[in-house]
Image 1 (tube, rainbow, N blue to C red):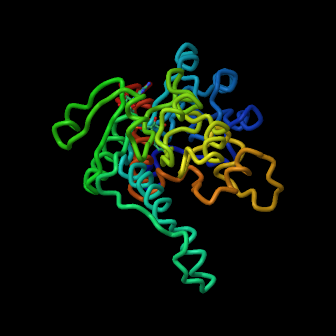
Image 2: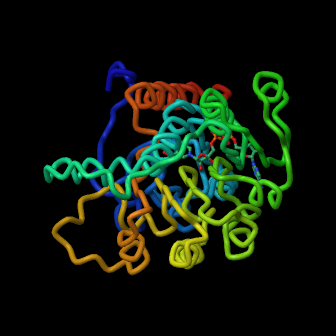
Image 3: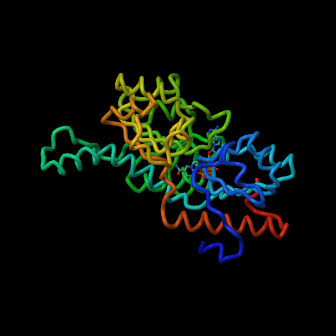
Length: 312
Ligand code: NAD
């Protein structure tokens, strides 16, 4: 609201975009979507039929939007490519440290007046090898933070980030070497055809025993069932996830009064060495302000029929 300064008429809808909610867009010029909204082909076509001309994403990732179809239909689509890489990178490191130092277990114990330290032993981050998959905006911030801890940083990306290499000591390597040598692996690449299920039975086989895996990027980068098998046999020693391949059915809403139907997440919840957050890595005050400002700017560009720097 603050970013809008009363320029555009904003109408907020409870629930996410789907075939059932899309009729609510009738009469509006633009629709603004988040990561839990479905803007796949048939919904984009439906919005177009209803007269919607623009789609403004409040996210960086756009795997949930068929922007190519939207463009074919003459619609303009823009996103928020960077709102706070710090928010997501810091959350990834939060998951690492919380898993390493058993923070959730320790807190629960203390709340029960149990001050025993049994089972709470962690490890020094210093001198551990951390593999960063995807060294774009978020991955390079994560690498910088971990460099501050004294970690050795390995990286895997399609392109080497020269600025990152000159700033800190990062070694680019193959995915196999990264998996083989890392104590902690953190995912920071986008979801696309090449990266879907990048972490699967085969890549897990390369990993060290007791490896820590952190996914704050997109759920489908990880074949969750294969991670569960690796958790069961101890190959994966810690798993931190902020994103989940079936998160559309679950995340961003309160299911506390329901019977959990998702067997995969139910199994994940049974592991003491799994830490789950519900896609909240982006959720800082600074990131929300930047998302709002860029989204309103995207609407301004579309309304004024100007080029938009964040258009897809
Ligand atoms: P970015 O585009 O700056 O960086 C992505 C990096 O991944 C690039 O360096 C790119 O070359 C690399 N990459 C692309 N394909 C690859 C492949 N096949 N193998 C290895 N590397 C590959 O993106 P970013 O801003 O750093 O965001 C990364 C991801 O984080 C986003 O795509 C999004 O899915 C996720 N994200 C999550 C949250 C959250 O709240 N959990 C918030 C924002 C972004």
